[in-house]
Image (cartoon, rainbow, N blue to C red; front, side, top):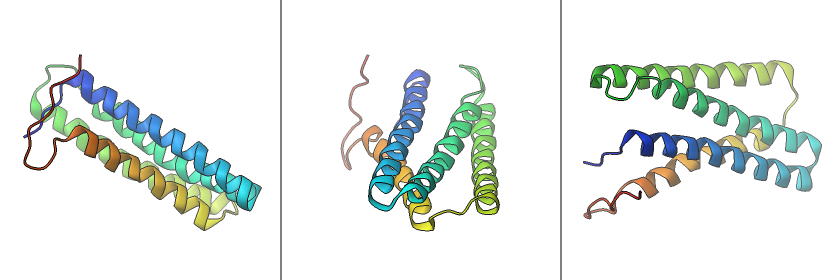
Length: 137
């Protein structure tokens, strides 16, 4: 079992959102340079949807105060995850209704930001068959 202290978990969540913002900006710049304004804006919007939804999860998930009962913490994360899903769906609907987008750039950037989770998770978990590294202070 791997455990994270609350400050470490909050930093990890913040780094995921920040990483998603960085990936979004890079993807948008590349799409703009290679395919033009529409693709660049579409990539910015696609990655932005993911970053905004992740920020909502982090804000709601970590709303329970330190030392709160495990049930309250779990409930906060369930509500945060449901909010993340709702925000994602609503933002995609708004984008599809109000904008003419490049679907490849939009979903490419969105998917690229999802990899930030996998990278963060891979860095936070111990290697297979090993033990967790000592916490950095």
